[in-house]
Length: 208
Length: 208
DNA sequence: AGTATTATAGACCAAGTGGTACATAATGTC
DNA sequence: GACATTATGTACCACTTGGTCTATAATACT
Image (cartoon, rainbow over all chains, first blue to last red; front, top):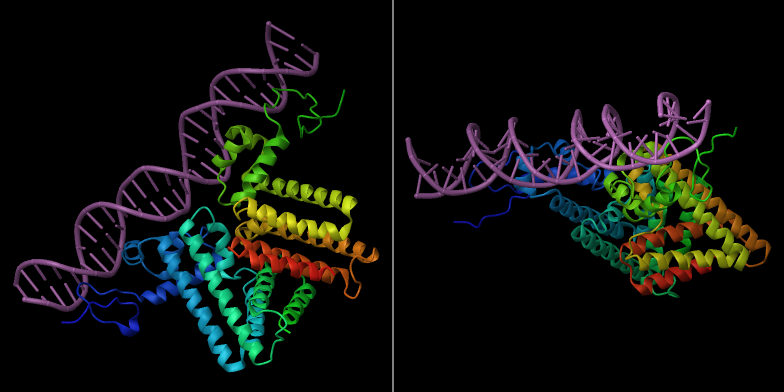
């Protein structure tokens, strides 16, 4: 006898009873995440999702329960990926370079995908307020998680002497994140390269 | 004989032929603008608009042609109001204080309306990309108009000695606007008062 | 082999979307 | 007063939305 295990991925598939799933759950989830990321929550219809996830409606509702719940899991996935990204980078190049690399990465992604992707949280955050209170509070929470991660990175950089300790780490992290968020909006609004370059410069100054 | 004048407001109503309009066009437009502002473009349905504008569908389409065109006019109105606001303020308290007042005004409005209003351009900008290319380019354009206005204010402040001339006015304006945009996002994401206060402080430093 | 269990395919549904058609009402012109 | 002109009210339309229902297929357990 063994305990029933929630089958989350093809890699660790443990055969449960009944007809087996014909698709990889995390794979479908990842596809959904990318689609949400590019189009926002409301601009993503169920049919859009079914298409990119390569599943049919019945499988969708059997597995993910609803569009809202799927999105919630996509946010989790997004954050997991982001945190992994930052952690790996931190080990490789240290905290300050990680923050700078994130900046470059964000900009590159924005420009590469026709100024359309941006940050999942920012993009979908605005449309959720009032309309989907549960998603809204969730997004706020994830936002704060990012803030504390940044704060930790700054503190670490300060201990390493990479960043001056004249200001509190949380303050520096707040300014950094705010400028980065502004940058997403600014680039999406069609900023010139000159302006973008200077804003990156201002970000560097914040991390001095 | 007189020329046919487009009847834009009750105040300068010139009786044309046919049944007269039973509503004030700019009044209805203003109501629509506020609704869009609070709810975004897609989250505003035609029925929502008809309700706040106090008109029926037929009148709506006869006067405003479509939802998209109405929104376009709302953006114009929004900008007109904003520019008036800045110009008046500039005459009263000078350029630097105007920029600082705008900051305070933005924050106050954000907090007052349950962190939901924000900047019309930012709020609706994101959802328009790709989906409504015409609106999208329009928003980008308006964005740049704001940028040049800010630039002008900074330049004026520099000439008055209110702001140091070590950096180019457009650079300072860019940083100011970027931080302000970030602030809108940050507050909507549920920032603490402490963080907000420091971001305001950073805005002041930009304008030193 | 039979049964319980889970997954899939696809028809179906009520509600909401932006937009149109058409008959009627109110005005100026002649 | 007849007519052209403009505005209004309302029924209607095709389409999309997120979500459910039901019949059937595929597996494990006994």
